[in-house]
Length: 370
Image 1 (tube, one colour):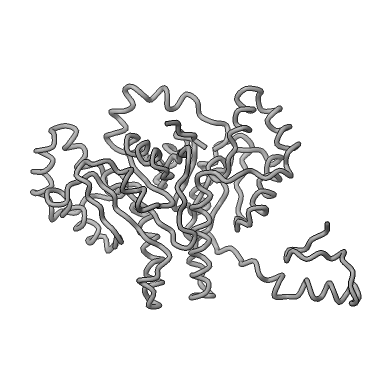
Image 2 (cartoon, rainbow, N blue to C red; image 1 turned 120 degrees about the horizontal axis):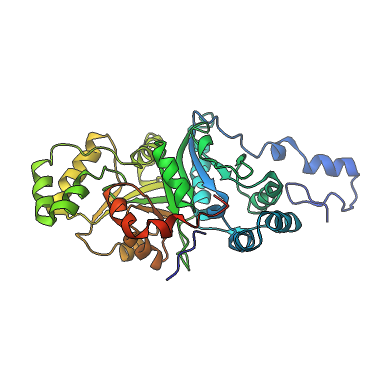
């Protein structure tokens, strides 16, 4: 298995050059009526939104362009992009996730027309503005609602994440993801399965691992240092003591905040956001602390799956999430083998153990595109 780190028409589609019995100004008024022009919604203010920073290379398939950069250099890369700027990129691994965010926004605008508590996607790229035209053309081609771009011309975009009030950053570059996590921003490295499972177009589904993702790595440290029996003993002793938060707790919190807006309108059973805890923990021996921690935070999880060490891939294949977060590459790869878009969260004790053998391999080929 391989994982890849990834005629004259108006907006309404009518041809203004066509002729019929009416005069040209009547045609124009019929096509360009105010309701048509106002159809595109206004993006929310960053301080009110749930902001998702997405790198261009996970939103779109830029593998060929990446190869040109790596093999022929920056100038040939820019030249190729300019020559092909009217040719849209095909969707990448984050595409369905972004479309699902937009579907949630549509529902929220119907229920709360004046509210700015919405998802806002920012395209983050260290590309040059020359390439921006192709990205804009691609976004318009796929009818995505992305108004905010951050094109840094070769510099890392990480410094801009806080300025955009970023709640989650997704990239194909593990180095940039670590930088974001070090800045206290939820972030994950997204991988592309060879074949992506079809997912819902109307309900956003997000699956999380527990330890070192939603929770801290406290319990995982006990397991790594002392084994399974000591881990069970530790969890039993501390089952009434909430775990500290992990890097993606804030993102789950943001999802929960939007879910409650649907619950407030009597739409709990028809909520377009659904969350999942998919953990290797055992329910009876160590599940209590996980659930009590979530409760202490005032957070609900729609479904909790305690797998007691069983592979996560088959369960995720049934869930069909738009995105799955885990701190261990073993589970990320297992999920991807089953067609799930999986993201690695490089946080906690598991990364220190992995780094001894894999750090150089993982960080030496940082891609040009974020």
